[in-house]
Length: 393
Image (tube, rainbow, N blue to C red):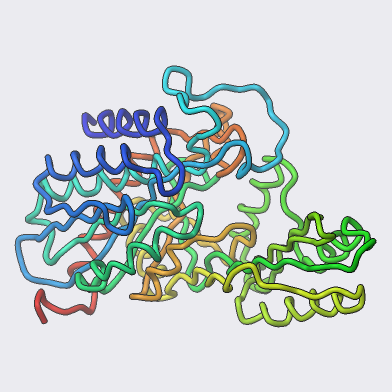
């Protein structure tokens, strides 16, 4: 268990010194140091502070990629407005950077990615092909994946499959797969209203277009996540999470999170009709960001395999998509099929809720070792079963 303890120390060092999107210099340096010490071929400064490491195994085979994100959260803005209890879970390794904290679990993601790489580098005879480890900056701003892909390095390495983990409020010791489901697409709008218009009232009317209400506390957050496991959830596939807020102008900012993404034009058209009726018009603030759709084949295969290695009780099957968050891992899955798995980090007995972006987000650190062992096994298994190409083909 020595590696588990070392990885917990890595996680705590990252947790203690969090860095915002695009500023992950120290985190990237720590990651690169760990990977080089393990003997991997490492490239730094990929699309900003991105790090890419390559592990060639003992035999020819396909190339598979594993991605971990490194950035922290602006704790003054990008945090759920949940009631606080005053609990402290990181005594001795709390953030030393005012207003910045790892409240989304990226410190665990990074430590797990390092752990998988170290584990497999130390037993490369298990690796029959090539593994590419992608440590991504700027996930919170949805910019890091695109920046890394724009360098062309990932495409030149040509992975056949992509995998990632994300912390979740499922119990520690479990992993959830989500075949064919994932996370919604995102589109930000600005509605310009005529002088004298009641922007607050208009914003309320726009939010009424939503079909789901964001959880108001950790209890509701947990209930919503666990509802994804209900077999009946498969019948509830469509969702629109709509946020709107008054701005000077008068104007209203609008954030649309839509699943499936094909429904985005319909929801946007409804916003445009409301705007026209109020004498205003809609401007796009950005191009729509794609939804993350987990490969049904890869997710199912992962769930089936992990059920044999971890036990069927440790693998959960999500039957619907979580409607409130977006992930730029979606861009990697446009390059090759991929699967984002949910790693359970909650511990009810210890009062650890595991709800990302909660102001008191905490994780059971035993999940780090669980994640490393599960994904190291899965990746090596996939190298022997994936339909891929040999190096250089």
